[in-house]
Image (cartoon, rainbow, N blue to C red; front, side, top):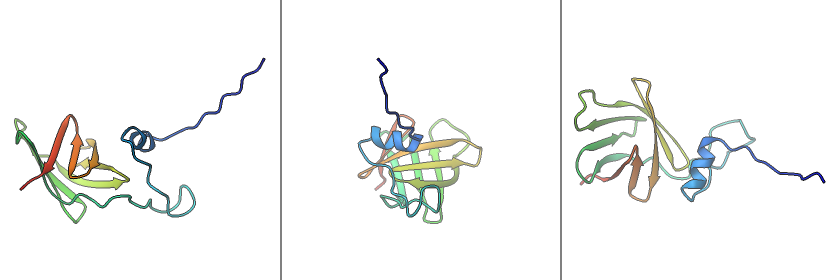
Length: 116
């Protein structure tokens, strides 16, 4: 007896969206063409971890700057938002995915809220 198995190939963004309970961003046209529609707007502003060790400033011009306690070099670079995932592209070459929630950002084991 031959058993048929259906499989689907998902990219990392789709898997992350499923894991976070959301949906992948909708495409604004045929697959693979044009930019994706963003399900949420960029979380522009200042963000801070509860213990004050991580700060992230997201700017309207597509750049960000940060500060991490104990590190000499301050992270900075550009960002891209796809669905509910903000990807920080540091000038050093490091790429960091950030889960965007309702008034919370989660990245690299840190939970950041809006800085007051």
